Amino acid sequence: MNRREARIEALARRYVERGAYASMEWLVRRDGHEWLRGAVGMADPLNNTALPSKPIYRIYSMTKPVVSAIALMLVEEGHLRLYDPVAGFIPSFRDLEVMERDGTRRKPARIMTIEHLMTHRSGLSYGFLPDCHVSPLYRKTDLRETAGPLSEMIDTIATLPLAFDPGTKWQYSVATDVLGRVIEIVTGKPLNQVVSERVLAPVGTADTGFCVAAESRSRVMPVFGNENIDGLFVVPKGEQKLLPADVSGFYPSDNPEFSRGGYGLFSTLDDYALIADFLATGQDRDGEALLSPHMMRMMWRNRIPHEQMPLMLGPVRLAGYGFSLA
Image (cartoon, rainbow, N blue to C red; front, side):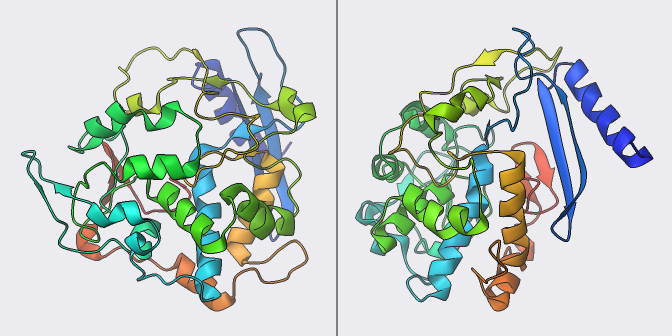
């Protein structure tokens, strides 16, 4: 083990030993080749369960870049345009309202577009954003308490008010879930099928999808923390403890019909490295382009206006909307 590997392992072990995580696994690749790899901890230290070979994780918002890249494929193919109104695909979005901080509601001053969804400037929200005045309404709807069809989730979102006029502010939100529904409508296929055909199969993943094969479910890592992600920024500070959480109600591993745009995928470290290679190069495992170099340059270019900086996620200031956030 070289000095760099030892430093990474020591840091990861400190996180595990203080109870921040049950385990940590890492992989660093350069030019498509493995450079560093390691793992510490246990799958379930409360029950003395060792890490399985090739652990499978619920990757939550790391689903978002995959779905957004597929939307760009559809843009490049002419099936979708960045300036297309979302309501042109989802009729329930025709009657959206903006809710002011005093509770009054009005019609939006701007039309919500596909680009607004892709850049998190749609006016939509999440239930866990402490400074957003519409977040309490999201919490009341229990969007994450069901694993029903994506279409039902999106129609529920359409009943909620916007926090601001589309395009006027950056705010992390359920926008990529809505984008996933647009992809379903444009392609005429379920999102899980589109993700498999457009990304997972071409890049060669073995254990990634919205549903885990029965013979592989023993490798799905248990979740520790707050079962309700809406409590993300309201958990009191103090001693960190590993508390088991059952998230199977809204994040099932055994439902072949389940899919979401903003979360929902299961994956392994090696599989997501293949996905990351695609997101960095636009190419599949054979070097064939899934996205053109021109579209890749557009994907990597900042599209957030300077006046809408800095990006804030609750109390956290972000350097940018990249893989620090997924």
